[in-house]
Length: 412
Image (tube, one colour):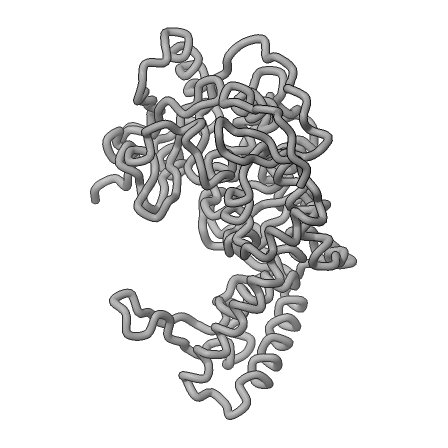
């Protein structure tokens, strides 16, 4: 890595974030374009997809125009976006041109690890003397059944082959031990291998239960193949272009890589080392120029598990002291309120479905007015009706601030 004396301070990092993550005025994608959602996903490398509502709200926060149905069309009709198990064994939504890079750089490793775990579960059940061969046969049967159906839930596939109804025990001996049908774990492995894909959900756009489809319904020829080391370098390049300057530790955390993988990717990429207020940061060699000035400060209401706050391990430069109120105990961020490149509070829905913002620091009257405008836009996107509105942004494990504002699960 080349070393330069260039210092990139907090103000410049925040300015880059606003422009590259399409949050600043004038930087948003055209939400009326069919490619708008995919364009936003590329800007972030991929969109954090563990929570389905976060995908929709995160994309719409970065587009002028667009609505819930238009994001759904990109996902399930135009199929310009695809869900895959990628970095950190986390579900992401990526554009079709970036998905093959993620598959080779991250998903294939995840698949191998998950398949080894599954073989261990099957050995415990005693389904066969040769569990490797037995599982390979079951995988082929599952793929054949899915191809015949076109799309199916795990439960529906389990009806096609009794072996897929085999019960396996997860977390044996622990307080949260549980049993699941083999079908769901086989589909997870096949998805990580790039053979099947999560399709349209059951129920509404906020559902966590998906129908599965063969990957060829999104990519008729399958995902183009990348050599692993080339894919790692390309993924590091994409990430530094969107999230740089940043540290090697940030990259390792975001990608879920080992130190060896990070070192290998950075050796190929040859970024430039810069000074991040005393810390060693990395930036692409062609990305040393300061960003253009933004005409006015910007506000944004980003959903829980959004790709921006989840893009770095070291977040002090935009997060401040707000971790206890905005993150859960597992390191997952809840809904955040941004003002001009930094998190200044959070938001949630109260028990009547109204969007409520809470500032955790004094950001000034302009910030309050801009946050109110962002809340009105979000409310219009969610539509009317308390049940739909509350379901749209409710997270599985509400943060302290969400509970305080009434955004946690409603009492029975």
